[in-house]
Length: 340
Image 1: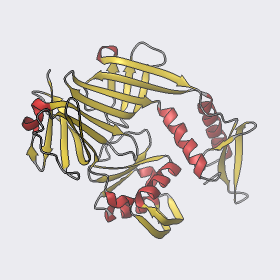
Image 2 (image 1 turned 30 degrees about the vertical axis):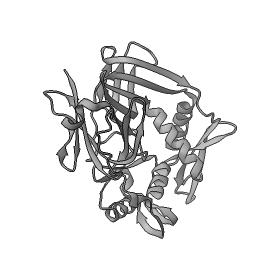
Image 3 (image 1 turned 180 degrees about the vertical axis):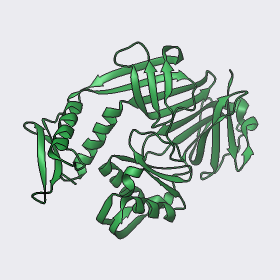
Image 4 (image 1 turned 135 degrees about the horizontal axis):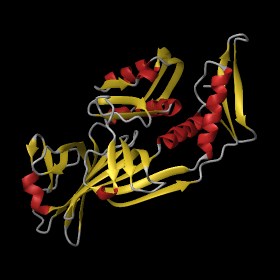
């Protein structure tokens, strides 16, 4: 199969105009709030390419001839660079869904509402539709100050507190569980398999995790009408499991499970495979490389697709689901009090 691409500007296909000048085209999809980006490098040997204006929006697709190309998103050009030698024109941009208005600072208070209502209100204010995972919709927010803070920042803060991912995508404002991949419509992403025959190069590693000697979890003791804590392990430092539990035994089981998770090393993997533009951040992948560290299920945290003279390649970075959950807890631990 022969790889190909398509670039559209203002509904006009400009692929044929630049195809013989293309040096490289890359699109990078990041997990979470980090904006996706694209890079386009063109051979401007004769200086004949008209310099585009920043703010122009390009639609990018990649794939193979004879097949439906995969939509890689819309990007707003925010940097134009001319360099030499050889003479090259480079365009860079961020995902067009990342609206500038989300970064405007606001001063307001949220009172006696739910997490779902906050996300829905902010989405509507920016002309987007909210997609909130069921587990977050009814979480009660008694009081939340937004003091000279952007909507982007407060949503990111809430996402970190509750172990979620917040991201504008395809006209939607997603607020979904971290490590549970969904597309722009809020539908689960399918698991993609990667075998040794698909892989150009790879590297898997185990890193020492930040050490916690003890983990605490809480439950509401109805007899005492109070919140009570149990602990697994001993000593300091201590990590607290965020969410409440129904009973002392449930809380202890959760603390012990989290302590075991934190005792394991943090694993990561990076792979370069023959072009598979369907691979995206938050997608689960099943790796089979006949290697004890590499094999198993992973969650993509970064996917970069590159088209150049050598063809189409996809480079991904991924983590184990348990590691994503643990990192989410560690981030929340830094910003919340025990039991919040």
